[in-house]
Length: 211
Image: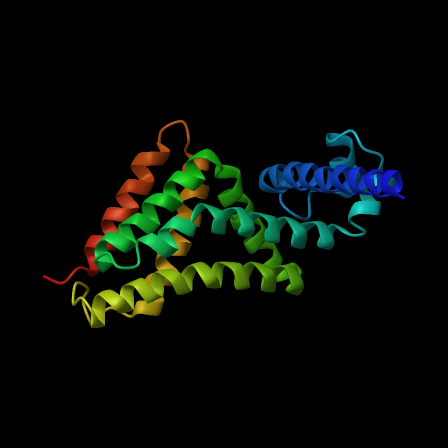
């Protein structure tokens, strides 16, 4: 019984690793080629797997996209555990700058994640309601974090301007990051990542600070 259980656990662990490897390859491929231009057959070839084996893990391209979105969301939350807990008592401006700097750092080492969200968001908005809704749900959570910080700075610490709509400002922050990553990728020969994102942070944060 114990041997059978051990074998089952090893098989499950191997299957879980394989799923992560598939999602990692899919994120890169979707970021480069988009949803419509990427086929499951191409993905299977890229990871040296038979199409049948790939479909065993993910029956449809939509299933794979939804799983990849959930996986990236989990990684993003892990990166922000400290920000969401230890920095809550900091002044609002410090919280917002920390949130944006951590996002910049996260995307510096995983720019394909930001490009993936941008590409998938753009295509799914017109072609796949389930994927679009999944993207909206995840990005909406990040928007909510930024919005809460801004409202805290408006009404509690009085650091931020009251004439700025907190919801619109938060959406501008998250949308600005995705747009900046896509833009910098297009102009990567002449535009540097850190300079672009640092300037975006300066404009957005300083723009809502009370004078």
